Length: 219
Ligand code: GLN
Image 1 (cartoon, rainbow, N blue to C red):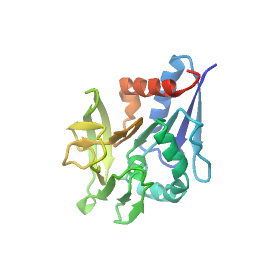
Image 2: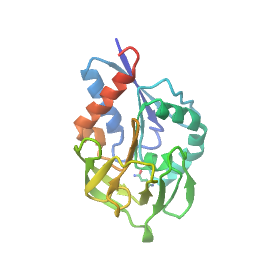
Image 3: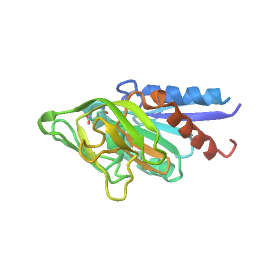
Image 4: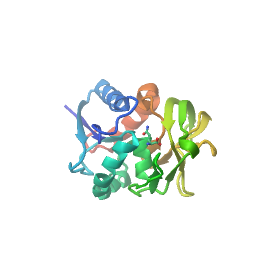
C-alpha cells in the first residue's frame, strides 16, 4: 500500500490548542485517498532527515517549551532548509512559525534566536498584551477564506522578500497593524491560526495533501 509519512516536529513539546489536530486531519484525508499513514514525532536529540517525509508539522507552544526546543532546532537547520527548498509540504503554527524566522522576544523580553531560514522577526507587545480570539483570513493566492483561533504575545513582521499567507479579515494576524497573516514560501506556510487550521479548513488540507502526493515519485 502507498504510504504518506508525516513528521510531527517536537510534537511532545509544542502542541497547544489542539495543534495535533492538523496532523490528524492530514492523516484522515490521506487515508480517504487510500494511503497508509505513518506519523513520527521528531524531538530533542532525534535526527530529522530531509527526504524522509511527505508532510512536516511544527506546532505552537509556550515560551518555556519554545526555549527548550530552540537549541536542538538549530542543529536540524540544514536538513530542514533542504526539505523546504525541495518543495516539501511544511506547516508551522504560532510558536513554530516564530522559530522559523530570525528571532523572537518572549514575554520576559528575552531574545530567542530562531532558525533564520526566513527573515521574519517577532517582537512582543507592550504590557505583555496578547492577541487572542477568533480570526478569519483570506488566502493571498486563491482567495479562500480560512477560520481559526489566535493567541499570541508575539507580533511578527515579514521582510520585503516574504509573501504573506493571507490577508486578515477579522482578528489580528501577524502584528495587528498591516493586515498580513503568516507567510508562504514554496510549500511552506507559517501562520498564527490554531484551531486546528487543517481540521477547520478542509480545502486547505486537501490542497496540501495533493501537493504532498504530487511530490512523491511513486504517487
Ligand atoms: N510564545 C509565543 C507567543 O505568545 C507563541 C504562542 C503559541 O505558540 N501559542 O507569541
